[in-house]
Amino acid sequence: MEGILDTPRLFQAPGRLWHFGALAFLMTTLTEPTKGPNCWQCQHFAVSHVPSTPYACRAMGFQSRVLPALEVLRADGQFCKLFLAKATTISR
Image 1 (cartoon, rainbow, N blue to C red):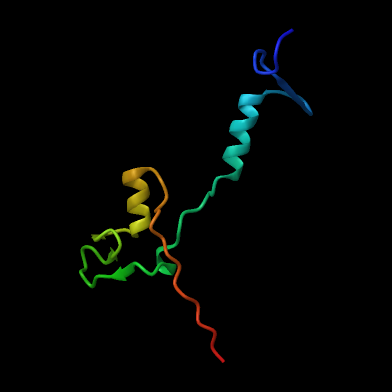
Image 2: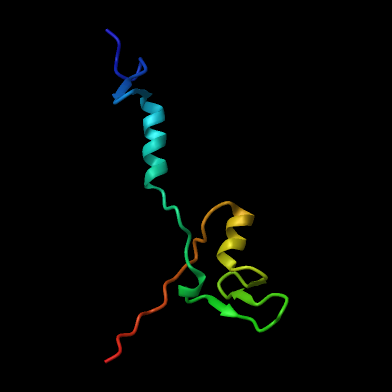
């Protein structure tokens, strides 16, 4: 008797036949965030007032011509892990 893990399992979707590996990939792709953090809403974001590098990240200690989150994505291939949302104040 063959076990479940020994044989490839197939999933029948309307008009398509999926292998469980492809289905798992599709499910993880759909659950991953599609947008990175917004630097303007981060506590570590700063404006450097240097015309050639107007944006800065205090947490990582660098200045950039583009938003730091985009620079991190370009260099590392992942979204910024040091994002810390600014505290929201409620005005009365």
